[in-house]
Length: 456
Ligand SMILES: [Zn+2]
Image (cartoon, rainbow, N blue to C red):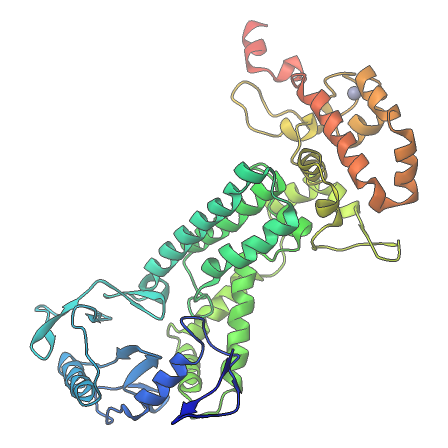
């Protein structure tokens, strides 16, 4: 945005304003800060002290938070603020002002007022878009519980709204879906995360749940698909690591600030608390690092992942120069190149091990049968080999499958010549093969059926 100042008929040169939020215009908050620059509260014993620096109140443009350690101290600051406003043509709205407290509530709650008008004491108040809960909480994540709940709900609602586009335009292309996610859903999921980094597991699970559900639906994967496929196929970062990344970037910013700034004083205080064995933001950050990156062990989930994703591990990504290169996680070319969404989703499900073939389906729990070991998950058509993607695509002698293999020979040659060009052919083929399999019930060997054991 560009501005010019007019004074008594004279115009100034243009001034560029590139930083700010678009509420009306970018310069208004700056004007407010200049106007409000002479508001001051003398240092009192009721100020919060961080690393020796007294902090009487916080300002974010016209969003003001008065801080005090006692009810009397707070009323004193409210009176000063009221007097300042009276002298500067400002009106305070007592109804829009709120009081919150942190720590145990006193037996009798004191009354607060602006010029005789009562100001309400509330359980939850919002400052700079963050909801804080009043009361005797030990963990900071409990103070912020409403923030997590509100933002997760909002993110989930927006995610549904984005995916609802599909009812109007058909399947949403994955690349565009990712852009919409980053623009509309992600901002809610990361709001305030660098401050609230040490969320409880229950809250974090909800945040992760929104990301997983969105990308599973976008890719056409089921609720039981392996999580890792979401990240390997789209290049999206797991939201808990995105939180950690933003918190570490905030830490780097705090450390770059001069020692006499509030933010640096807050960091120093936080580190001092952690050294004294107490809870603090810095300790929370260390806890999260330890829980997300512990000493490497292979949990059960990883064993499941390695069994379901062997095709993912072998699969490479085509480069501009025609070579193939191994990438752990990126936005895959095939997702944007396959135009038919049903074919694209069939291919995604096949390579991520989220398909309808026996090798995966017979690992699902089912009340009507026992667990079927790998070597007994046989093909429902030839009943000789294990029903794997490679068997279904390349080996099975069942006639309709054989026909689908010979249908597109020129395209198959093109696949060998150039991987990019083959995506659509390959995906169509995968889709056709899976459709043939899905039209016939799974072969469950009799000895694994619960009913057959009863009758035999
Ligand atoms: Zn077969």
